[in-house]
Length: 234
Image (cartoon, rainbow, N blue to C red; front, side, top):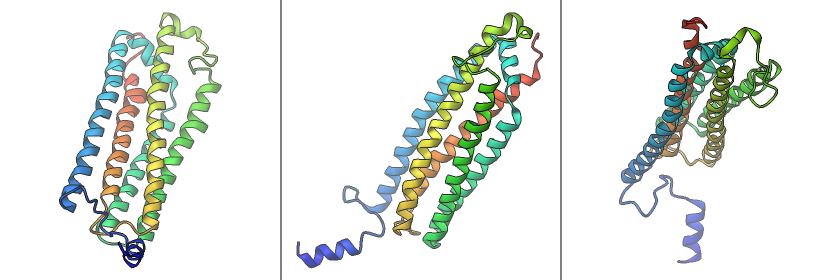
């Protein structure tokens, strides 16, 4: 290949992002989407196992889990739910901006806004909610204190809190991974990689982000709200 051709490729990269191993761009797009859906299917199995374990133990230790649910601050969970729903909206707007051929600054704006909302979720969870739980001595393994009013249900309360921190902690880890993915997308958008013909990385990353948000939509009522329908002695 001549030096002139090499320079031409270096200064004019493939605007569609087409990779040579695919027959056409449509096949490449479908492969990307299929790969993400397969990955999300494994994530559903993973989180599904946790939800199933939680449900079984909740049925076996209902009074303890009701008490544990009442220890959580619903306003923290509700606020974070609103934050994540807004982040799903901004992620969808970033994808739509690419689909209709808007400027890269528009795509970057919505991606950065999504990152800010994601970081806000983590900040609220760590600085306010988890710190509040630590101050109240209901973090298992970190000075957990049993309260007399719990009676014989006390051991099961700590079990509930173990489920709570494991499930919300794992969700937070997925959020951190999502923020890293969004950072990469911002870099790609800044280089003008996304057009109305090529936006699949945004689309499949959006699937991941929406999945993480949906997981929280299940976690919020499961941990914060359902217990309130029963009495501790029921």
